[in-house]
Structures are given as C-alpha cells and as structure tokens.
Amino acid sequence: MTDRDRETPQDIETVCVHAGGAKDTTFNSVITPIYPTSTFAFDGPGRTRGYDYSRTAN
Image 1 (cartoon, one colour):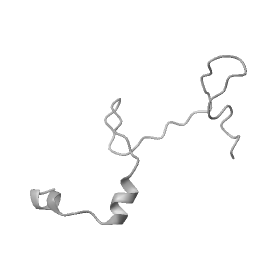
Image 2 (cartoon, rainbow, N blue to C red; image 1 turned 90 degrees about the vertical axis):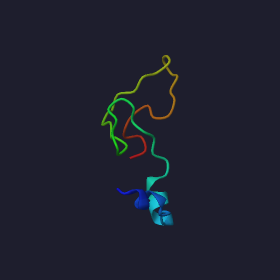
Image 3 (cartoon, rainbow, N blue to C red; image 1 turned 45 degrees about the vertical axis):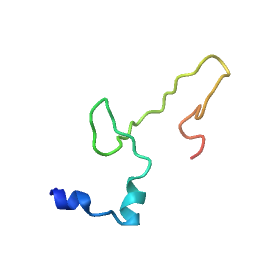
C-alpha cells in the first residue's frame, strides 16, 4: 500500500464490510477470528448470559 492509497477515501461498501471488527490482540489476526466452541462459562447454576447451548438459536 502506498501513501497515495492511504489518502484515498474508501467506498461505503468497504467501510461497511469492515465495520465492527475488533483487532485480535492475542494472535494479531487481521481478520476477526472464528473461535469454534460449544462450551460456555456461567456465573453459577441457572445464571446464563447470552447462549447457554450453541444450537439454541439454530
């Protein structure tokens, strides 16, 4: 990428497709990594936050 490329404004499509991505500081990934898991941690019995089973919304 040249300095000229950095100065060129991005199209709205490019901005939208990259929105919401957070830098992965663990592995320094460029693309938001996918962590395949079906096990979730809970604060205690009967205290769920978000998903309590990976196929609930499937």
